[in-house]
Image 1 (cartoon, helix red, strand yellow):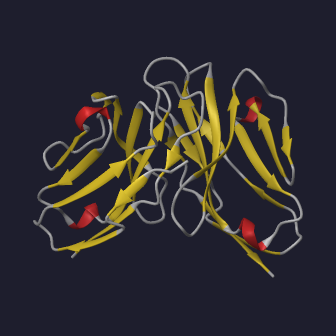
Image 2 (cartoon, each protein chain N blue to C red; image 1 turned 180 degrees about the horizontal axis):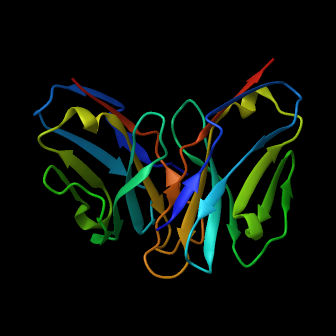
Length: 115
Length: 115
């Protein structure tokens, strides 16, 4: 069975601080996809990134960066120099590559950036 | 480009009543998903369509939930009779193809409160 755990229920930081959101996953598959989605107050989930289990290179996109470590089954997300607009609920998700494909989401981390 | 449209945004009903939610995916997207998001939890897949065929409905409570996708475009999710534990946000999403290689596009959701 697949499972995603986001142990941090809520995080609150002051604007311009760096913040890391943790994600730990469980799967028996040798190949899989990992995702991060953002859910702002409006409700729709917004895709941020997809990583293939083949590729453990870290990725940076502007103020966002992702650290994928297969050895510890973690896929952490860091926001550098946080801004108030980053306030949202962030979800980590896992999907199989072969066979039935569906996103399995973690419980989410509510991030609040205070001015 | 228009996003995924859902209606109604909010619905309050009493237990044992019925309710229906409507979703219009992004034009040209073959795959449509219905997710249930209970407060404080990550979204859980209820049913996945490709065109007008069901790909996965393993987590759909079929004794009370039903869904259809007529002509492979719009979709309706129905709950009859509703239970208190059905209180949640029902998210519709669409993607271009069946493979989870790209992003899912989510609507803003329909929030259901069962009293």
